[in-house]
Length: 313
Ligand SMILES: Nc1ncnc2c1ncn2[C@@H]1O[C@H](COP(=O)(O)OP(=O)(O)OP(=O)(O)O)[C@@H](O)[C@H]1O
Ligand SMILES: [Mg+2]
Image (tube, rainbow, N blue to C red; front, side, top):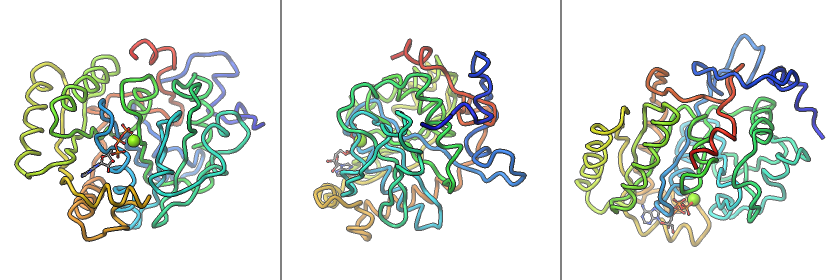
């Protein structure tokens, strides 16, 4: 069992104090606590509200695109109880995040290598208890990241569908929330519900929008316009258009081969679009006045407690 409380970030737990929320800091600045040369880490949560819109495909393919751009990428399968990043990549990991959360393994021991040098922190499968992390489990996870020997420079979080406490938690702790939608009306209403909860309850002010399964380029801008019309009118948020991924039969084909489309069909239109998203992501600036969330993984900062998140789910 690891003594998590030996880490300086756990001092407040020992003393029974409430977590400190430090909105100005994020994982990017603290993976080498104490080091004068903090390496920046970009944390991007990929969420949607509605299920089946392509989040996992977006995560693994954008991760591959960023790895090709010389970035050190770690993918966290945050569908903790029912994850399938490993399945989409044809991996059969021996250990999962469940072993980290039980204290049996360090995070570094559980991380596996995927295609093109990306790393994956696999989720468990069918472990209902992980559907909503307790506060102690959130701390264990944070501690695991802080102790990584080779921290990433990009952490991509593949969130579960829906508005569970875990989804809100991972969105809130990230630097950016990339909301994936499709042109389907139900996808738009569910994305709006997600943005509404994160903005009204957690003061998240900026969201990035990626439109997936687009059959005509015009359709993507139309989706963005429709959603921004309602967010502008009813919510105090900034919605940034990132781009779109075309509907591409190569994706289901690659899924059936358990490979990312970017490696199975690198010249497909979807692969090229994922590369564009990866490039754009590398240029996102961090403006914390717009971000507003809790930014977990901060030097002294912890995210919202599980109990707080649970109220919204
Ligand atoms: N651009 C696309 N073109 C064609 N098919 C796609 C595209 N994107 C995703 N798909 C298909 O949609 C299905 C769902 O994709 P994926 O598993 O990535 O969605 P998800 O949002 O992660 O789902 P869940 O909410 O269940 O986690 C997959 O079968 C995939 O093949
Ligand atoms: Mg998924």
